Amino acid sequence: MPEFFPFFIILLAAVLFSSLFERVRVPWVAALIVGGIIVGPYGFGLFEPDSTITFLAHVGLVFLMFMAGLETRFFESQGVKYKIAVVAAFSALIPAAVGAGVGLLFGYSPAAVILLGVIFMASSVALLVPSFQKMGLFDSVLGKTIIGSTVIVDSAALILLSVLLQIQGTTSFLHIFLFYPFLLVTLLALAWLIPRIRWALFSNYAEEQDLFERELRFVLLILVGLVVFFEFVGLHAIIAGFFAGLVLSRSIQSRILKAKLHAISYGFFIPVFFVTLGANTNIGVFWEVSGALVLTLAVLVSSMGAKFGSGFAAGKLVGFTNRESALLGAATAPSLSTTLAVAFLGFGQGIIDGGLLAAIVALSVTTSIVAPLTVGVLGRTLTSQRV
Image (cartoon, rainbow, N blue to C red; front, side, top):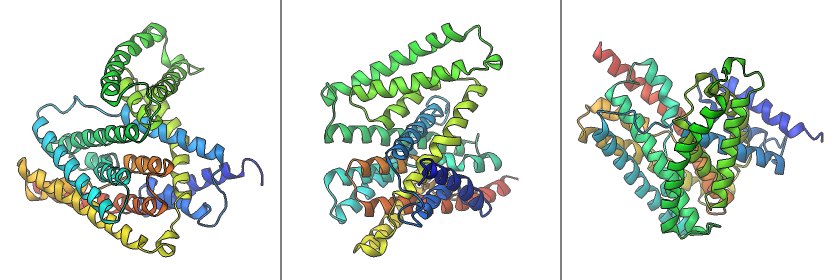
């Protein structure tokens, strides 16, 4: 087999399936995962992820979390902080408890139980941002509440994941109770230092004339450097990628530079991750392993129910109407980027098995299709009522 053939198949699947599924309004992430399942070793067997493909997938995962951190804004929700805090608390605690309960019910290890709780917490409101913008809800109180609370919950999920990995075993030279204060001080110091280094290097440099992408290389150097540094002190690469994005989010304001980072991430590395994730998903466990289908149904029903119920209850508590609360609950249901990143990491670390990974992938694909449709219907109803 030619050396570049697996790489070609991955790119072909990324282009072909995203285009085909777009015609039936299926999100591109779900399309890439399904494409990976079809062309991978558990489908038609056109390729099998080798060490090189696996490395590129890990790079894609780091870029995915880096872009999530880069696009995170903690201080742009003035006036709705109380609503955000209440919704975030409900959307984190209730799904986490339900997820942990499912893990206990099916006899998983304590680490897997905690990981499943983290997975149930995570959401992916970015999938719904275009719909919010189209319906005029993005800058509304409801829109700010949904987006702000989701950012907080996803960040909390990643921090809990890092704590779990620290407890499981780490190369950190610090005790866990010293590690996070050290991490916080380091992040604050880097957030102060990096913009000044960038200004010193590029303050007199017109980015329109940056033919050799000097500034882009600088940002990539900082990203990889921060990931390596955080790994040295005991933080996993995907958590490091997220924190690197947070550190750089305040200093990277250029639309041109952000567009270049977006092109590199979503044009190449991130699709490789999602296709490889699909290729590593053995859907055969649904009929090969006893109880796998029951586990998948339990994960689907409990996660979607917990997300919708907690969102609806929180919405009512902070004064939203029934329809607004229902939209809030539906908007927290998607389980994509953070969920899949956590699941992929848990599977790689041996915390969860193939059956649970397949169930989580099924959850991601299902919610990425159902949630936008539900939000679209509820959003159009709200918009028509306001008119």
